[in-house]
Image (tube, one colour):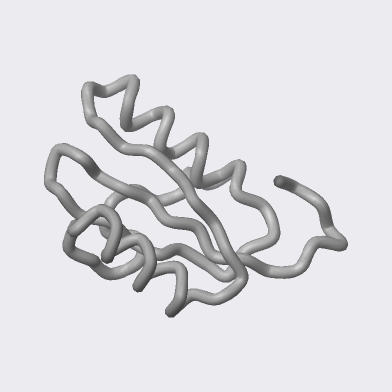
Length: 83
């Protein structure tokens, strides 16, 4: 989703092993987060990214209602690796 002219958005990152999710952002490029999730999966963790949305609070509320997972602070599941 990398586009320098994109509107900022928020991204859900979920750790299915721990049963938690975090809302990351705002951002305009989710590649670093997707790369961090891939690194975690390659190290035997069930971490996924998505969905995303423009409204942080609505995104978190909707995700929690559907998945019934606990929310955790941003950056507590994975962190993008420095480039």
